[in-house]
Length: 240
Ligand code: FPP
Image 1 (tube, rainbow, N blue to C red):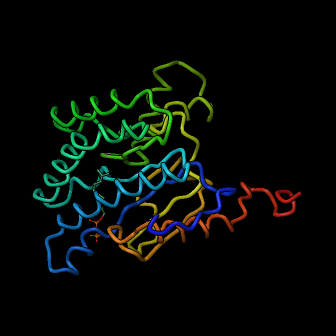
Image 2 (cartoon, rainbow, N blue to C red):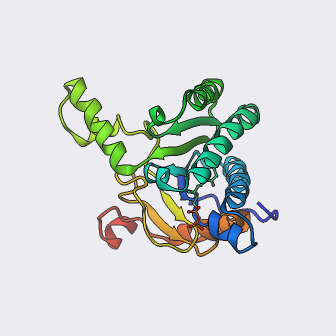
């Protein structure tokens, strides 16, 4: 956090999911290439993971690269892949030291072998940690997730129930996100955690991702703390 004011932790979300939007515009507003914004966005992602770990948030899921992002200009895609690979290599020791369990959720088969290896290595190194679980959603799409989980369930021969399907979703044993944040001004889910976000509280911020600092997170958490989560029940039922 950028100052030392405590955040009320009685209503701290266990799981925060973030659509980190606005990197390109952030860079362009500074007369720079879009990729400059992704680099700044990566720094911000790292800082967000640290802050969430310090606050005691148990799960943080960041949307880093969607199944649809392959359609961006080749130069940008290749920059994002390199940034991802380099960051995995440079950051995994520190993540491990901070007791973070790193997981990449998404269709890993779509990445080149080198990146797949870097992902496996970082996941293996941090597998036994029990602090923050940091899910990086890369080559991820909510529809893909539901389809791949259905396929696994079908192959298993188990009965088609919600409880059985959920076990195969890419987020695994993580609880569903309590709070889903999208930065950058757009108000849509963009094929992120379609199943898992069914009851998430949504928070949309106009702030571009590279500017979404600890102060901004604090605003989101304060807003979340005021929400009454009803999960389909009436207000009276929830408050008793
Ligand atoms: C959306 O901004 C951002 C992305 C598609 C990539 C997100 C990637 C990072 C934050 C860096 C990598 C992070 C990790 C954790 C691997 P945009 O480019 O759509 O911005 P725009 O809407 O302004 O064009």
